[in-house]
Length: 179
Length: 98
Image 1 (cartoon, chains in turn purple, orange):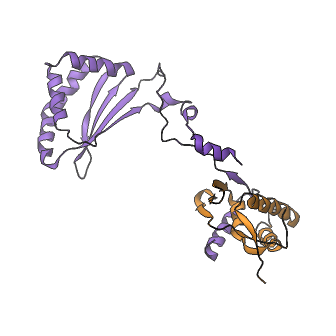
Image 2: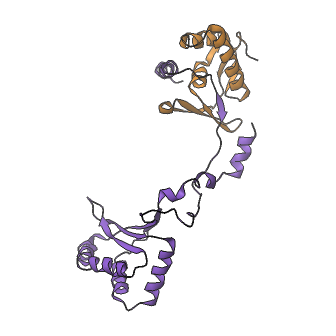
Image 3: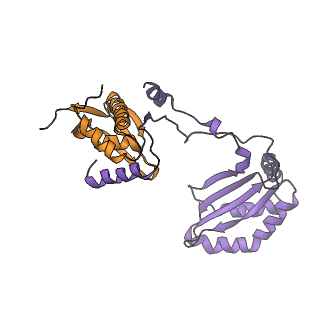
């Protein structure tokens, strides 16, 4: 230890709780950054939506007023048009993060994974619809190359599958096994 | 084999990353590249290894955990811990000073 204070701090830890004999364990490698798995199908029954898709992006400062004005005029129409399709898709709004106001989140939710494909199919087949045009206009404001698109999946649907999906690194595992 | 006469110190270039909020310390041994997790008691033994003799390690360890263990039990624990730390290259015997 670098100094007396650090040794004293460890002493307080040692004397502070239930005594446990010394143990020195090799740290097992466990990399989680690359674990990718698909949620199970069919999903567990629930009244909640299954997926939320989140776009996060910055709008140029000079375009903020125009973008917000567009949403003020058109957003309710987008909500209604998506709902009327009865595909299990929902436009849940576009939100500005305060205080700066340039970061925006657009949220979509889907009752089932299939609803995403069905919604996509609908839009592709109806390029002259008002919904298509409104979404095209909305998308035209987004010229942020760092746009994030994340899926939020209902956590209860992942019960029991995250642990089994853990990946380990084969090189680090060699060292861990070489005790 | 633990010796009460030998002196013990941390090995050169040992990297320590204490995590006091979890009561553990991570230790990396560059000479034999491995990462270890030490619980609080083992971390304490390691902290005591500053070149002192084995018998002084026992005294210091026994003094701190006296409410929990007898001196013989403390001796047994520190013998195992020091052997384990030495085997893993976390501590080494050094020349005694004085």
